[in-house]
Length: 346
Image (cartoon, rainbow, N blue to C red):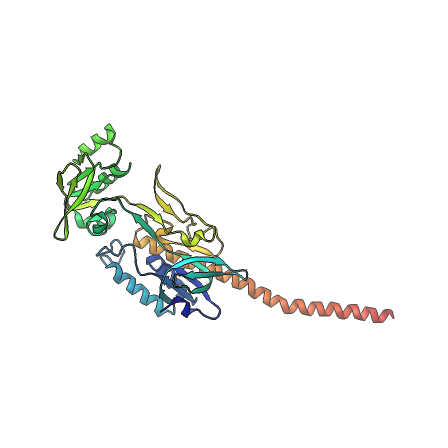
């Protein structure tokens, strides 16, 4: 169903761009607050390749797509609407609110906008990495470390944080190999620390991944040598999808880990409010390192903040409407007094 066919006569209180954990959590809070909500989502979540999601209390090991299906049912159960599509742009209306353009050519109006469009993982260009991403090519030890405990895990070094990553994954397995690939060579102190923890270091660039059946079997180096490996850790550049807010004059900023740039994000305050009045953002769009439960919490917080902002606006309007009859009556009284004074003067 096209999103533009769902437009209400007076638009929506809130349009949510993106229907992952953050977007659905925000939409659920708003729908339960009796707000009219439209979620626009393409149905291609970042974690779709993963079989299970972890560290979500009460839902440990849930399949990501099952979690989203349950979330969609909960949102629509409270009257929220969900359509398949993508928000491509938004612009402010003179009368207030936003006109939200969709990829099918349709448009909807919204009093407020919640951007939960997530991010794009820019993966190293090594044959096999993209194909195995989210399965046995991994990036987060808290998401996948337990599942590869005690196995042979390689770390593909593409930046200065590779040594840190190797030491981190060493918590889950003693069989860690650091492939220097294109990263700077570790310093003497780092080499000592790696050796002290039993982490092997392999020189040379990685040519491709070796696959046996449907499993990662090893890492092939450019010189022809293959090192056995059951999982490979990569550190993608995590770029926020900021096209929607860019059209409203808000640019993404660098996401840093210490002194190093590891991605980009949409700048927002702790409640998700951006520098653009009426626009909130949550989830991986604002925090590239947020795990699923953190992204969901961010969406919930933003939903509450949006509802509070709408209430504040409605209070102002109600007070103005209440004062208007009194103002009109006062004006009539003054006019009558002036006319009366004039009559007495004749």
